Amino acid sequence: MGLFRKFIRQMRNLIILSKNATEYRRLIESEELPDLEIIAALRNIGEINLEIKRDQGVLNKVEIVLGDTSLVAKVIKRIPGLRWVQSTWAGVEPLLELGLRKDYLLTNARTVFGPFMSEYVFSYLLLHERRILERMQAQQRHVWDSTITGSLRGKSLGLLGVGSIGSHLASTARHFGLQVRGYSRVSQASLDVDQYFHGDELQEFVTGLDYLVNTLPGTPQTRHIVNSDLLGWLPRHAILINVGRGSTVDELALVSALTSGQISAAVLDVFDEEPLPPEHVFWNTPNLFITFHTAAPSVPRDLASLFIENYHRYRQNLPLLHKVDFDRGY
Image (cartoon, rainbow, N blue to C red; front, top):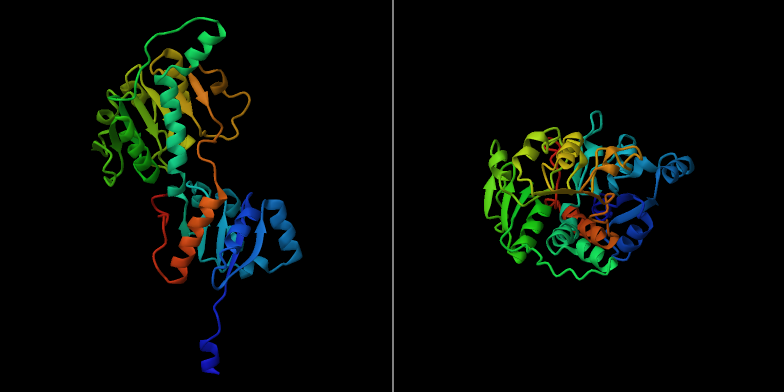
């Protein structure tokens, strides 16, 4: 009997909770991962409730979850055997809320979004330097506008946060000949950053910057780190781009800075409240570009590849990629 038990395969049950659940299921099943059974692939809370109604014990069978952070957070208390969550998001704030369990491995998708973020950020930097909007307006007015454009070469870019996304931005900045400063808690891993700043060096970090890009996660320590003081330290020609979390920016302070001309412009992809309410002051704030949390789309193919790599590690008891520290919040 003992010998028979030795050869019993240890199956690991996975549930997929994502708006892209069907595609994730297809991609993962095509890999025929050993000892893995997908017991459900559900796209929203309605489908989750219907599945629970059909099978009262479905969540009791789950060991692994692949899912969108906000959707996973709604059911995580009801999964007693949970051991690992692979989030499809870089941000995991909904899973860090008070009262939610933290007795499992949590990994996020931080490295998947670097190339998308670089495309997004540098499209707006080039839009500004190459005066693309002004050229379009001149064309519409039938005016020959031959004024000289600017260039990214030699300009200064500050990265507020130099994790995996910030490191990718630094690499792209190097290609365009920008001088790169990085502000981080302790890390100095990116060799593409020319100068690092930490702790109380925030004013020195932002002074004289042409561009400030915020990639920080939303934690108690980063809340409103972009405030009236920081905005006041920037030169008037500076442009702020936020692809981190909306909570990191003091929205009223930013409105004041843009309205008064304290900084030149801002590009925001993330906000304290999403979707942005119709009555929000941002809709009518001058020199503000809004992009509706679209900077880095979640591509199932990329995220499924990350899950597959981590699953092989999980099965072999190896350290997982992009493990989240619950105390730090990232």
